[in-house]
Image 1 (cartoon, rainbow, N blue to C red):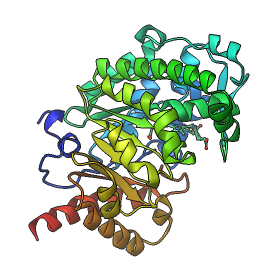
Image 2: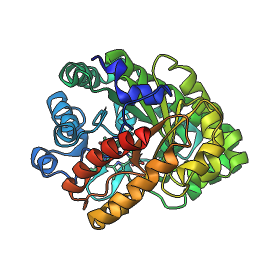
Image 3: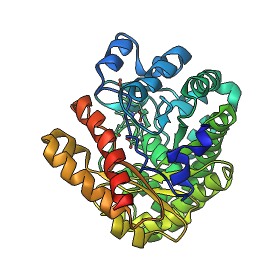
Length: 345
Ligand code: 1CP
């Protein structure tokens, strides 16, 4: 069975599926002992530029869990580094930018990205697609707002104050920055799709910080441009705390809208335009509770997900590092069995 007929890609296209497909954001990473082992002594950005390691780390969760998709191991700041931005991913912190972008002349440091800037991405994805067979590979990128936040703030931020200040106080510079980041994101995703990624997810993780009218004016045109470039593969759009933005994020052109744990999926289905599938949305903290709690909450997500035109089971955000992998293994099996049972019943 080719990946095209997989439950994951069928659900993205809102076609009938034998069971609800499932994968987990951050399914590779620090919750897996085999990940910690292969990463020992190797900085994150170096791992992201080493094809053999990318392939190995991407496959680790696929070996362990009955997930319906793999996600390319990389990070949203990899394309920024590839066009020459001086940055690092610090353990326990996240991306840190050496010299943040705050003045007009700083924009000269950004340029478009071509596949030649990231040969290790092409090599890793070709290898992965060959190894994965019928399991589809999701490519991904950070959306311009979320990338802009790291570049302007200089690192992780709680309120994104400087970012929003630029948006309101210097709209011209804001739009120029967003346009430059849009080109980089398109280049990074195009490289992945050209090498064989079967779907793309655009992470606008921190866009929940803006109100709907501001989203429409300062963010949405750029997400629209990105999605318009990828009509050849299913497009997933995800952010955290985006309950009030779900409709607009669906309008921006995604086939699948990712939902965090704050909005139940039956309510989310009412908020997105017709013709969109949903992805989500078990609270990742639930996995720290005993299995009986996980089972009850996961069954609720599946029931509510039936209100959507298509449902891909996921967490409402990434796997927490302290998660026991055995819980995730059991959850993937439960999603398959319970969704097949619901469909029959
Ligand atoms: O040394 C390490 O292990 C560093 C931890 C780590 C890992 C495993 C980081 C630093 N990034 C990653 C990989 C990663 N990043 C993946 C892997 C694929 C998978 O899901 O299995 C993905 C999809 C990302 C994307 C990413 N990076 C996002 C969007 C997704 C999300 O979680 O919202 C964001 C916001 C980042 C930035 C980032 N990189 C790393 C951290 C700790 C962070 C977040 C920092 C912050 O709170 O702002």
